[in-house]
Image 1 (cartoon, helix red, strand yellow):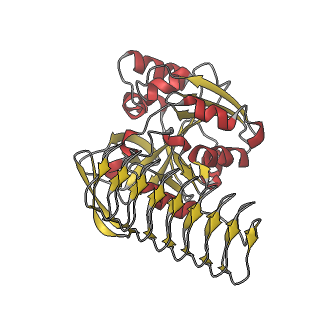
Image 2 (tube, rainbow, N blue to C red; image 1 turned 90 degrees about the vertical axis):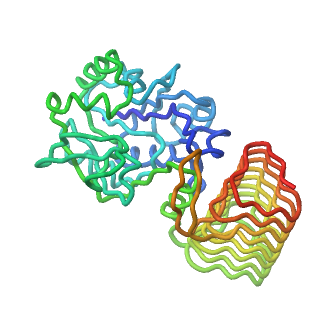
Length: 396
């Protein structure tokens, strides 16, 4: 069986995380989202994969190459104009030789998800799941196991059953999608809507793990669900007096200095310098070449490569992008709050802050829960941030 992965989009609602990379390359558990998807496919014997690329495609191609390092054979197909998901699928119309899997490239999934879809063995099948926030997705109407409708992001959802965007299709669907696109239906849900009677789309509800990041804070929850470490895998240097409990992975060249307390699940990358006397609680992932200075506390956070956090800082349930510099005595605490994306207010539970890449934060800065700081900002000593900060801003 073959698979087509849609990875051309920008992910603008994920600002500031999507400015430096495609959404599909956002690291979750120190691996890009797209890498989790490819692993799930390969684990189920699906190794012939086409990736539809567009926005910042070079980053994807540089990471995965021909796919051989990941046990796959990868073909890249460019969507020159980002006109919609149905249009993206038709860009790959010549790729499948028969039945094929279709997947969005921005959802982290477990291998169980693919196993359940393939086990059904019947094209055409849509993989469904239940969501606590169905209005963010395509809400599915199901009648006797058959999909009778998908309503994209309804104001009021009649059911919690949603489409994951993952399908097992017969190759003949390509022709139907082409016709829908020619008629101006560029989104996949929109293009499928008039075809339900024609293709008789079966619905399978997955028991596997499926997680999507719509807003930047979603990446924190996604990271906490997909940090997987079995036992302890310690490749770095651990000084005397370090306490490590539970599943903790530490990469080569990393130094954990005396007095540190690390309670897993935690993943720490290569070439980091942590401590002394730093506390890291579950569920935290730390990228490569990160420096964390003494007496800093970190919990439930995602910290990307090249970042430096000074002493006596508090980082709770926050996301810090690559190459950020944080001064001493700075607080990114978490609480229930309202986050803002454009003109939309989103209720958040136990969330800290999101800090964009290449931002410099001074000493004794306090950042209110739910605040998003853009890329390349400069926050001066003693600042108090209570609202989102645009890219390349300076705050006094």
